[in-house]
Image 1 (cartoon, helix red, strand yellow):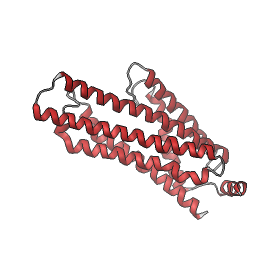
Image 2 (cartoon, rainbow, N blue to C red; image 1 turned 90 degrees about the vertical axis):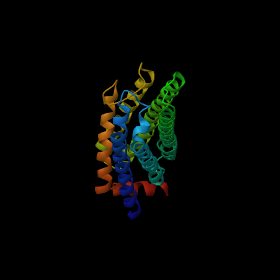
Image 3 (cartoon, helix red, strand yellow; image 1 turned 45 degrees about the horizontal axis):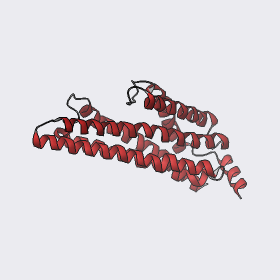
Length: 235
């Protein structure tokens, strides 16, 4: 029981670290991205852009570790879903975050090149636009693998009652809405998803739920009766 209590606390902390890092990443990069000369203006705020980009990594890796920590517990109920969560919210999610980070660093290189030459020719503008699109597509794919992995995790939690069903059910429905928002972003006319565009508002329920979920795990942990039942069934 002590091991699973530590697991619950660690998972809750990882959720919080990932979320706070994501918010800080946006705080650092959004002002630069909002300028009319973006991405050629990045080198003028190079340190700010690098910090924001590294914060994306700090967001991605803790979140990708969540299903890894949960795997020993979730596999007691359904090993397929537990492994699927590791693949989608672990491996594939980490790959998408790396794609976004690489795109950001390459945008910095384009801006530095512009700063050296002072000439924003057509090829440089095309390269910058292509890298921006690559980051946007990586973000949309991230939303898909994130939500699919979330459905797997919350389905197991709902079935096992490791946390209250209102909380796991909220997460499962939120993951479905998150998936729908990103599907619409992929097939929509503008492949950039935010809370204020398209169906971006559908991301809000899951964003709130995962913070409530994180606090619940830190404060309450897993249902001991459910853990005992899982352990008995797996023996």
